[in-house]
Structure formats: structure tokens, C-alpha cells
Image (cartoon, rainbow, N blue to C red; front, side, top):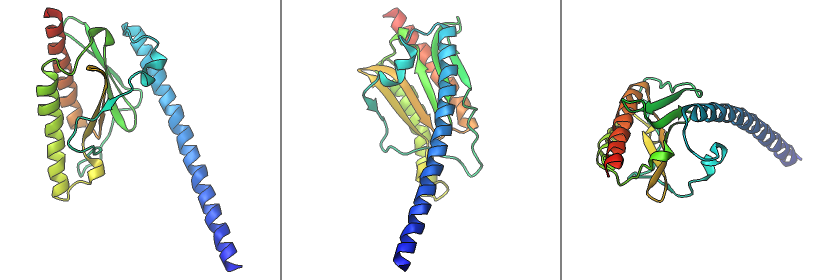
Length: 202
């Protein structure tokens, strides 16, 4: 009898956890939908040619994680503050030519290159500068903090590069604090501008 009561208590607790999880997921879905609506309006307003925008998340099938280890983000001892989910930052050349769009959700920073430019992972300085000198250096720094016990592995800086063949469809960056955000925005804009110049001259 006592065992039955314990089982019932466990089931009730499990039911409560499921209900709480469902409530959180429902809230997250609403936030994602709101963010998606914002991104769609910005893309349309800025003239991004991404076909049917609502199908973009399902277009790229292969996801390449260019990391020695796939480890999530890294807050320093101080708490991190990601920009609000509706924050959208267009990246442009000096002549106002669209290069990419940055938007944020609660978990990550997303970079969507302008598809009309056909940015490839093979076009310099994407690999030798942005990946090796910016992304990799940030991850190395966090790896050292983990080794010293000043950061947990799940808080490490990390990034995913979503590709369609060699074309860059999206870069997903996790665990970005405000200090790194400035460097990342500047580095990503400069990289895509240099890539665009090479594409135009080829």
C-alpha cells in the first residue's frame, strides 16, 4: 500500500513537471513566433531575397559545426545580458548594400547572410579570419577558463555554421556577452564586406 502511495506521488510530481514544461514550451513558441514575425518584416522591408521567408528555417539540411568540440556558450563570472529577442541588426556595406541580418533569441545570436550574394565558406576572409581568428580565439579563451574552473563547459562560446553546399545560410552563435557582441558585429560585417568585394571582382 505504501508503495502504491509513493508511485502515485511520483506520478503526480511527474505530471506537474510535464505541465510546467508544456507551459514553458508554449511561452517559447510565442516568443519565437514574435521574433520570426519581426525578422520577416525586416527582411521584406530591406529587400532580402530569401524566397518564401517562412520556409527558410527548413531549407538548409546539412548543419556543419566547425569546432573541435561542440560546446555551448560562456558567461563570465558577471551575468550575461543578451539583447532582446526582437533586436534585429542589419549589416551593410559603406554604400548601403545589404550584407547580412543579425537577430537574437534567448539562446543564441543568428546571422543570416543576404542570399543574393551567394557567400561561400571558401571565400576569404571567412575561414582564415572570421572562423580561425575570431570564433576559434573566443572558444580557446573560454576553454582555458573551463580548465581553470572559472567557467562551466555548457557556458562556453560556441557556433554552428549552417550550409547548403558551400553556401553560408546561417551562423548560430551561442553564449555571447555584450563585450563580445561588439567585436562580433564588427568582425562579421567586415568579413562579409570583404567577401562581397571579392565576389564582385571575380
